[in-house]
Length: 248
Ligand code: PEP
Image 1 (spheres, rainbow, N blue to C red):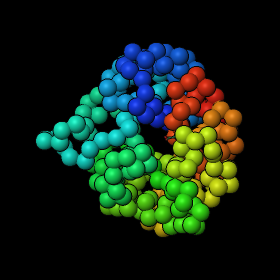
Image 2 (tube, rainbow, N blue to C red):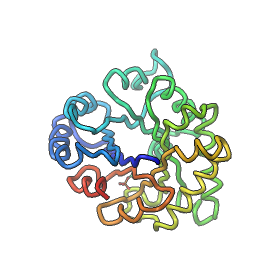
Image 3 (cartoon, rainbow, N blue to C red):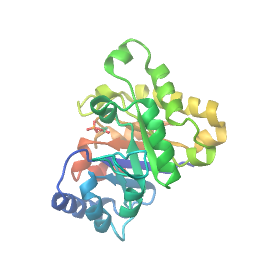
Image 4 (cartoon, protein in one colour):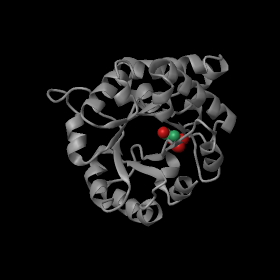
């Protein structure tokens, strides 16, 4: 039985003081959730404050990115050890904004996934298509490829620690959500590719999230789909409403 997971991607929002204030609002609402794993992914500079603020609750902290080298002359980058040392358990990798604005390729995402796992961080690996790709009918091909390359050389023991987030790019921050059926169709295709690579037993253990304008109104139906094990939430994770999504 896969434990549901709802993660909030705060993106480039909230100063450390604002992060602390938001966590104080959310903590009593989602802090004791047991059925659903709750993860907050604040910006790097808020991580220390966030780790401190969630102490004594079930909330986990994740980062939004990470570099694939251990240390050295990589100005502006953040290493896996730094995230582990700061108290992160998860790290979002390959978000479409990283791919789109910062040129992250599938191969870079794979390097990051391998490095994160080597350091005991659990990657939330984002995959998803643009509207143009959907209209061209290549969504499943693309998502299969993104998933397969991201997991290249990842052992079955490590694969079960990863979470795949299906995030259609046209649904991110646009208020347009994939229908339950569209989301389930692609998440089922991801489960299929995981089965091809790792076999049924491992594939059934890996959690798949849907992300893209999830809100308190649509979360319940999306999360009820057989291959959707929770959500990666952007905009709605910055408000008290996030608790309604977790409770969905
Ligand atoms: C995201 O960026 O991961 C996301 C899903 O954003 P939003 O919920 O705002 O669409």
